[in-house]
Amino acid sequence: MSLIFPDRKGSKIPDFREIFKNDLPASMVTFLVALPLSLGIALASGAPLMAGVIAAIVGGIVVGTLAGAPMQVSGPAAGLTVIIFGFVQQYGWGVTCAMTVGAGILQIILGTLGIAPIAMAISPAVLHGMLAAIGIIIALSQSHVVLGLTPTGKGLANLFAIPGSVMNLHPGATALGILTIAILIVWPKLKIQRLRSLPGSLAAVTIATAISVVFAMNVPRVDLVGSLLESIALPVLPTGNYGAFAAGILILTLVASTESLLCALATEKLHIGPRCCLHKELIAQGAGNTISGLLGGLPITGVIVRSKASISAGAKSRASAILHGVWILIFVALMPEVVKMIPLAVLAGLLVHTGIQLVNLHHVTELRKYQEVFVYSVTVIAIVSINLLVGLGIGFGIALIRLLWKLTRMDIKIINQGNRWHVSIIGTLTFAGIPKLTSQLAKIPPGEEVEVSLALRYLDHAGCEALHSWQESYEKFGGRVRAAALAEVWEKCQPSESIPIVNCSVFEDIWTRNNGLKDGVYSSQEEGAEYSA
Image (spheres, rainbow, N blue to C red):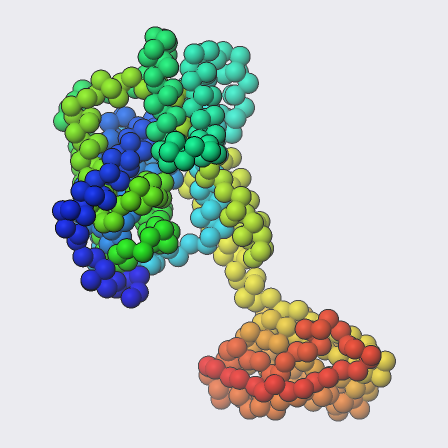
């Protein structure tokens, strides 16, 4: 069945024996992965640490229950940290929570209207550029926390401040942060299967925290102010600047929805269980964000790291995602002192590694195949050097300009083969290309034999008339134009026609395909003409 309308049988809830056998152990692993990540993301977002915990609980219980992608695990995500950090700095935490609520309501509306895929209408180059830039910003800002200090600014400011932080580093915190990063790098390469099966983030946080406790290291640690109930903060509406507030809701909706839906599709490739329904998933994400914002939690998206950990640990249904939220709730409510043992440098090391992973070189390789690296690079540079919103705007603008350029591009190749001229017109021929067309055709001397080959994606009436006029004029002065199947094109391009020719392929451009002529002989075998309006 389709991704949008999955088979209902595929969403069958397993019995309690299957949950106990498969989903219960998987939920424990997911819980151990999610808790430190949620705390770290809250730290990087400039939000209260408990806000990350609240979002993780809501993402597990609420989104997990309603999800259209049953195997996906949702919670606070690294991809939103830069956005949230900017909102918190500009508007305060209460208004940021109100934005989260607004984004959640908008997601519910989009999902209910059945237009969830619209949220995915974003250039891959811009999307991957945004994630890479966010990864760079996270790594730069959290490197100061690894050194036992605090971030000094945004983007490049944190880069330029690193030498000063190195000169004033906290030895104990730095050692723990570097140890955390080293474990995260080495852990997947261990030869012992039993150890490698444990999540690297769990191992890194556990080992580094244990060392800090055993040696009674004097380092900054997680500070959970008050209980879980005391940490609930109601959203606050802004007192002015409502345009910026609405823009923040829109950008948060776009990024969170895109990340969640792409994660749902990626998660689906990791298992053979129940398929996902994108519309239902977007509604579930909206419900989660609405509730999380109302309770003072971070925004929620689908998270591939947690989803992969859950599936790899044997999860078979949505019960794993739901239970992992339950375990976080129980653990933080009953054992907050354990959480308070975790050094901030350890969480920062975890985030530095996460940020570096967001700069995915595989994506760059794929984009190079489609000549999209320029858009990717501009997006990364703009976001890191300016800010996320402006950088995204620049990225979208460059992507749109490139798209228009590709859609309107026309290449004209004119080759003199002794007693014959060959003209090859490739791409899109519209009124905008007529000046280029006429100037190029004017280079052909009068009275010659000319063979015209068209390999066009799009041809409008103006282009047709320009070619036809040139042919008549050239032949009037003694030249000869051979253009196989052009007569049919002229008939389709009469002024009475109101619809332009689309996907017009007059005949196979063998000359272009072979990059020239063999033995000075040009073959113009007609493959036939196809028209569609």
